[in-house]
Image (cartoon, rainbow, N blue to C red; front, side, top):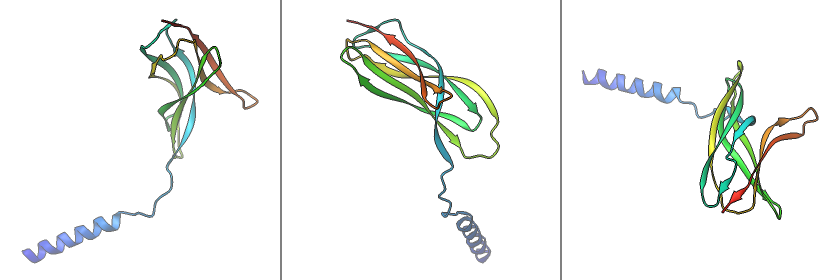
Length: 142
């Protein structure tokens, strides 16, 4: 009986080891920008408060998933500028079904400065492959 048990255990171990392949190191996804269709911000910010910025994003197909927001900061003497883009993950699949779903997600934003904020949300590229943005300005009250 013990001999049969050891044979079965050995065979199961061999099958487990043989079924695991470490040679497959190809990337099975890629990052892609998603188009933002709308964003919701308050009319004014209060200094020191944290706000949730709600964003509507276009999901082009069932192989694409929302991963994160990329918020880049720049400024002028009179404003704080935030350029926001939605970053998606596109799975490496052959048969992706076009869905054009509009998803809603958001991110937290803390108001640290008294100057107005300008949010520039990436909406896609125009016919000349130049980026286009939805711009929303929000003043800050102290």
